[in-house]
Image (cartoon, rainbow, N blue to C red; front, top):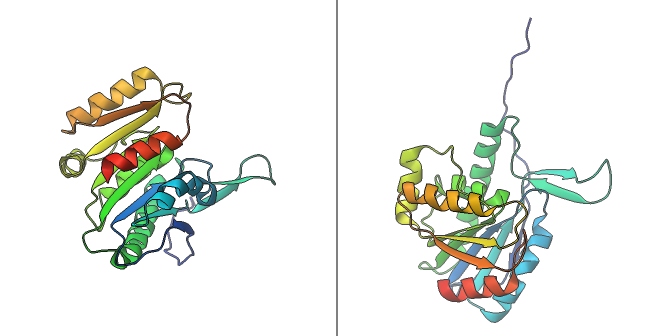
Length: 220
């Protein structure tokens, strides 16, 4: 007899990090989502200079639900949002988690607070899938060194991108995103009805402090 795959919903603890104090004076909230093999505690450090310069800004960095050793069975640990195995269940799990996080965070900020969602690398597809089912309307979507998932249902994708301005950010020497892939991403988004703004910086597959500052100034 062949074994049948089953699923059981369970309660577990999810980890996130926060920069800035959430109050009624919080006018801007950024949700920043890390890439494959990263941890939120280190990822959020890239945004510390933004909250230091802007007391009305709070940055929230959720962490992927699956952690693993980056090499072997000990040492450095990273997290991932999903793999190809049981992917639809993992997507549903992180969408539910991120929606619950947003429902907890956003009522603590000003009611008219602008919400920016930034996904880096694997996090770009993660936030895109999340926003398609989000419990709020974001003000901006930033896809940094990553792309919009091509497998999202067309009506869902076009509805999202029709209402949310998109910014693409990519280093000129990114070892994972070629110039051809970047152009394909721009064309793909255009086919979905979006007109993405493109920001380039001299660098590789990483976040860049000066570019983040420029982005924050443009979105404020």
